[in-house]
Amino acid sequence: MKELILQIINGLQLGSIFALVALGYTMVYGIAKLINFAHGDILMVGAYVALASVPMLSSAGLPIWLAVVPAVVFCAVLGMVIEKVAYTPLRNSPRISNLITAIGVSLLLQNVVMTFIGANPQSFPKVFNVKPLNIFGIKINFSIIVTILVTGILTILLQLFLRKTKFGKAMRATSEDYGASKLVGINVNHTISMTFAIGSGLAAVGSILYLSAYPQLLPSMGSMMGIKAFVAAVLGGIGNIPGAVLGGLILGLVEALTKAYISSQLADAFVFGILIVVLLVKPTGILGENVKEKV
Image (cartoon, rainbow, N blue to C red; front, side, top):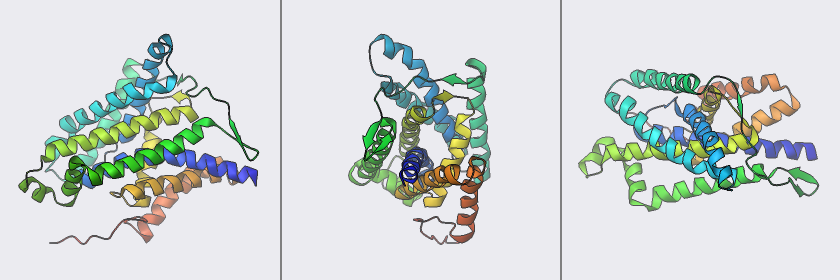
């Protein structure tokens, strides 16, 4: 029983990281109707920025987890630059053009990192120097608790931001009707840029949490993470923020339990099998709504 509870907790940790990345997918899709397949690579860039910040933090006597600050700032700016350079010129183009561009941006980021930093794996120092907590006889790493709490808090703050702030309401209005938002004076360009910045910042937070569990960096580390986060967004209902979190948690639990009780080699097969089942049974996802397009 303890083993099952521990695997569920591990699944919630992994699912929380999926959820943070899936939030970026779902926000960008909800507002710009774009599937940004480069989003997972922004997580990778955030991880390398965090690694570059470690010597400076160590020399100043600051904790390693503060590397999240430069990672968030860098990734937020990177997200806005990518949106301006790669996606804005294609805003009125067919969606296939945006999709191909997103894949191109993903490959570009990976190759830039491989060229200037190298393709070899690099290790990341321990993020939290705290002993595992003993809760009812189960030893739980501190990073697991932090990951789940941070994801929950950021999700709540994001919901409050969207519902209570002027800019959040502008984002919701843009997602509902792009043209009407422009007519009522909303600066749609700024709204979309800020959406990319927030989503990329969340991916940077996810990178630190990921490194706290898997302390190794690779230029390709964002690819599989990005695809799984996309599956999580589709599972929960892409464009729906609670759905992205729910999809991430379900996906994390499925992967952890599959690795523990069936086969670690079949974990990815189960994850992508879920995507196929969702697309066949409920293409709008668990919390997605059916929207009929008018001709």
